[in-house]
Length: 215
Image (tube, rainbow, N blue to C red; front, side, top):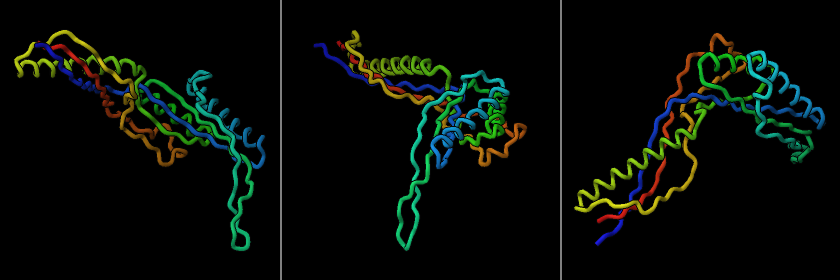
C-alpha cells in the first residue's frame, strides 16, 4: 500500500555583504511653509553638491519619502497648557546605495558629514543582488528536504517515490548584516579617521514543504 510523506526543508545561507545603503533624513522647520520647504531643499542641494564632488552622478541620491506637516507647541499660561501653532516641518527621507569597500565608505561618509546639510543618517550592509540568495536558499531547502525524506524512508523500510507537491510561502528573507556602524559625532569625523570595517556575514534562511509518494 502506497502513501505519502511530507517533509519541510530548511535552507540556510551565509553571504558576505557587498553593498551599502545609507538612509538619510533632512528636516527643516519654519513658521513659513515656503521657508520650511526652501530650507530643506537648500540642504539637499548642499548634500548633492558634496556627493558630486565625491564622484557620485546626479540622481544617485534617491528620495523615498517627502512630507510637510504642521507643528504645534505646548505653551503654559496661568498653570494651564494650550497648543499653539508653531509653523511647518518639511522632511525628506533619502537613500544612497553603492558597492561596499572601505575607500568608498570613507569617501561617502566624508562627503555627507562635511556637506553642511546636517543630515541624520544610518548605515545598512546588504547585498546588491538579493535574488541570488533566494535561489541558493531554495536549492539548499530542497536538498535538505530530500535528505530528510530519504532517511525517514530508509528507517521505515519504504521507498521514496514521485514528488507530489511543493508548498512555498513567499516571505521576506533577511539580506541585512547584523553589524552596526555608528558615528556618535558625525559632524566631527574627518575622512582620515574613518576606520577599516568588515561587516559580519548575512545569515539567511527559508523553508519549503515537499510531499512525496512512498512505496
